[in-house]
Image (cartoon, rainbow over all chains, first blue to last red; front, side, top):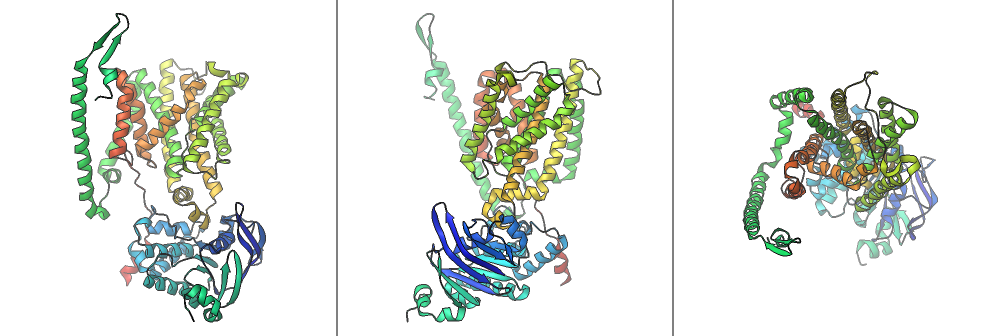
Length: 237
Length: 391
């Protein structure tokens, strides 16, 4: 479904991604784990076109997207939950969700999806007329994910949904991620620091270090891999 | 008190070579500042207690300004009263008053245009007067060279201003905040300097005179008739502006502007085309300034670059900030206050600027959101209600 080949991305003169190859097939959850500054977020930004890659190719459903503008990429069905949530603080919850459906014109469908989301996160329904900035961190993350779903994406890019949240909320959010994946067959590309949780949800995983993919395997194998355990799971064997 | 000492108390009489000491003034200033400091403290205290009181009931408290506009009992009679007043105004008051009112209405129009750029899209534009100049000069020059009439030039001027808006928009797409302000400031000055120095094109600092007033199916008006005609034309244009800006605010592009002001990256992730959205903000904002400029040229019948200095930009920006960024009614009130007050305060002409400054400072301390802060109409979701009732 999504195929990245030899991606090199730069911020000015600094190279953030070196020869990144990733492949995702339809309907799976894959995760990209790695330390701070490894290039995980940049990988997502390259896919969504906000920081376009300098060289290399990205194909989505057989279509080259590495030279497209971000809005064209969204319209193809890739939607991103940016790192640090980035909801619109002065818009209400409903308006935030509505912004997620910016490129859609089917009013009936938008309404249905909004009801679906309020069923998924009842707390958002309670707060639907409240400004986004007044929500708690966990609620904001729920809102950010919901906003991305409002675009009815085929591929959902999730950037660190566990950032700064209490463990119980993190678990709740990961449950919802699995639910979205199984109910809508939405492919999910999950970037996480919390490698332990991410590998439990995902089917396959990529490990990134200094802008390179150094390891890829099924999530199960990665969880039992000694190197990964030592470096990212914080377990000594 | 002591800061004002050199100007207020000492007066050097150069004719007789003596120094006059005006101790009386010192007493007055002392008493005045003493009193003012009390008022200041009282208001600050009131503001604090007011905040505390307001907090617990904040969720269902509707701001007074919003109540005012939603309650039809107040709203409809007020609208009728204003409409009647507006219609009879030029016939009751003198031509001088009508002229002032026309100026105020021109400012309402262009301030509403700037409100799109600054209030909605959050792009601080300090060179806005450039578009005003483009509108004014396009009427003056097209009329001078090709004899085009007011009504032909009105859309052309608006279009040209929009074009300049896009020209300015392209290089500043990546800039935000202070940097954007500096570049737009430069742009405004460039336009003014070009107009001042390119003699063959714009007749330089001497300006263009004898610009005809707008025509009405070839009827020639007396001076008074023409003024009244421009007055009603301006009322029409203002209503049109309010209507369009109001519609824009609630449209998709309006929401995209608001979202872009809040978070650019999130906007891109939502599939909003950043380039297009910013450029439309610049272009649409400039359009109103262009139209205002055309009317301005037609009203004064004479324009020169001195009318389009940086102060003009700042004045318009003050209207938007003072009135309340993003709020249409606030900007209208702001324009009337800032344009009419100086006119009617001519009696105290020496203290005019002082008063003006004091009002600005007080406003920013006690009502930082502007006279009427923006009450965004929020879009409410209705679908779920039925569902909860059913279950």
